Structure formats: C-alpha cells, structure tokens
Image (cartoon, helix red, strand yellow):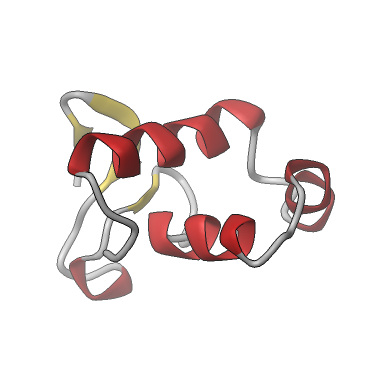
Length: 73
C-alpha cells in the first residue's frame, strides 16, 4: 500500500503488521520504534541493530506520534 500522504516514510496496510503504521519498505512498526526509544534504546543502537532504518525514519516516527498526541498505535 502507498505511504500515508503526510508521512512518506510511513505506510499502513491491513496485510502488514495487522494494519498498524509501519516504516515503508520494512516490517518495523512505528509503535516498535517508539517503544524502543521509550525504553532507553538510543538512536545509534537502533541504526546499528536495524540497518534498514535511517535517522529520517526515526524522526518520522516521532513526528507521526506527536501529531497524534499519544504513544500507542
């Protein structure tokens, strides 16, 4: 499914991650990234452990969450 219009790095598809928003081109959900950051995982660690992630993708997750006003997706 195409990316969400306002968030080109985030997609939503009912056949991927049960329809939860995820990072385009991956199967990593926005909620996963937010949970990892909230638990204290650093951006550097995420980028090392998940080479498909970019700093822009992490920022997109934070913007997506901030625009919705809460952390659970």
